[in-house]
Length: 95
Image 1: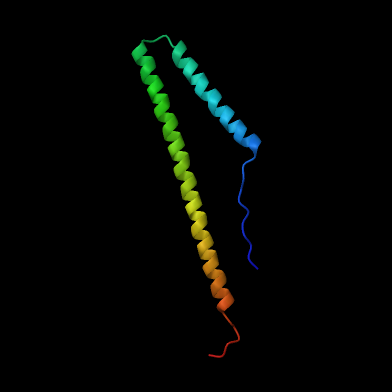
Image 2: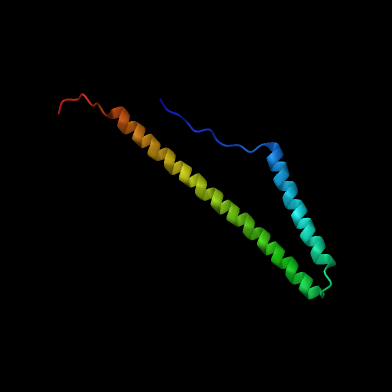
């Protein structure tokens, strides 16, 4: 008997919460940078740093997800090979 693992799905509420949280955090940092009592160069530098950090976080999340998915594929291939070997094996076969 073959058991296929269920694909884990995020709910719409979880997705909405993640998007809302990201939007609020980015808005708060933007307002903080704008209200900062510093020269335009300092605020510009901080703005670029926030954009760089944000894109780096998205890239890291994608890399981690891709690695996890690749591990699941390898695991499925190994599981299929094992099931084939076990199905072909006859313990009562005369040698």
